Amino acid sequence: MKKLKIVVWDNIGNTLLGMRPWDAWPSGIQRRLTIEDQNASARVVQLEEVLSGHEFELVWLYDPVKSQRGFRDLFQEVDARLVDTTDPGAIDRELANTDFLILHKENLPAGALDGATRLRLIQHLGNDYRGVPLDAAREQQIPVAATPLINYSAVAEHVWAMILLDLKRLADQRAYMVRRDYLNEWGAYHPGVRIVSDLTLGLLGLGEIARPVAQIAKAFNMRTVYWDIERFPELEQRLGVEFVSWDDVFNQSDVLSVQLALNEQTEGVIGAREFSLMKPTSLFVNTARGKLVDEQALVHALRSDEIRAAALDVYAEEPLPVDSLLHALHEDKQHRVTLTPHSAAQGPWTWVRDSQELWFNVRRVLDGEPVKHLVS
Image (spheres, rainbow, N blue to C red):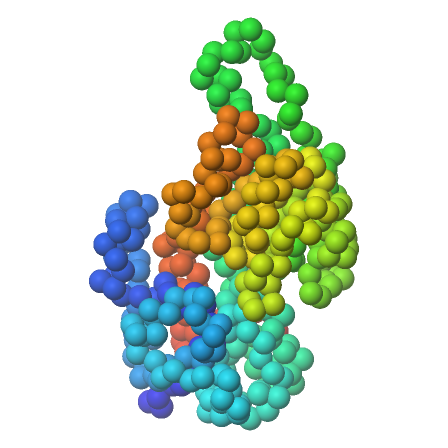
């Protein structure tokens, strides 16, 4: 049987993170997995098990700078040949004799497929596969699959949990019940509760997390605007969202949710100027990356009432320092700020489920079974 060559191009590591052997997971993560499923050790399978019966070579394409933000420890754990994508011609050379290409958040040059005569599947992790040249893949008759990320849908759920916690003043109402204040006034007690359909949601980025956030907003009959580095006319129609300028997404939004990727161009991109554009009644939500935001400017905007509230799952420094000024805002009885410990993605099981589904697709090809999540 011919040895398979599998190329992974992923600067974050999610394609392989969930394929770690059970014994490679720290004991704390093993405990978390087992709490949710007593049979966890059997469900966590490694790559060799999924590809059993096939000898294979694994090549991992990476960028030395971009990969610093990902799970770099995997480089030492995974038995893969590392290839620097900044080396001219590296991508074309590796794809020329590759059987499977696994992609995550990368832009594949269409020309790189010209010599990929052995390629049996391009497997993208996530439904936001804008970096895959579908026309070139069709011309070469290479199937393309894009598996949805459970990780991302979990974050979208967290976004809406934070939004509704704030707009429905649930923390206030909990305190109201604890104090038994309801004995003095029963029913619709809190004047700060908002009707979602009266408000405008702004999405900074319309990637794979923002899209289900927009779907829920549509169900609530909420006006939704977005900004992204590119427009998505088909999504605008399907999700009922409007493209606006960078400034307008800040000044039109009653709720602004950040869903941008962190890179050299976006680090610190949201600062004092952006907060000054926002409504004084607005809610700022960030479940993307803390370093997208000038945290000092955010604290100032909250303290000076430039914005009303914030809900954060990510921070410029993580874990959040115990002396961070955000703690005092979070603990204030006005409940204007909600903090969670970078928990929106829900951790280990989302990693395992996301990685496994894409590798199960590779196995389906090898076994001659129908591929799931085909997009081309």
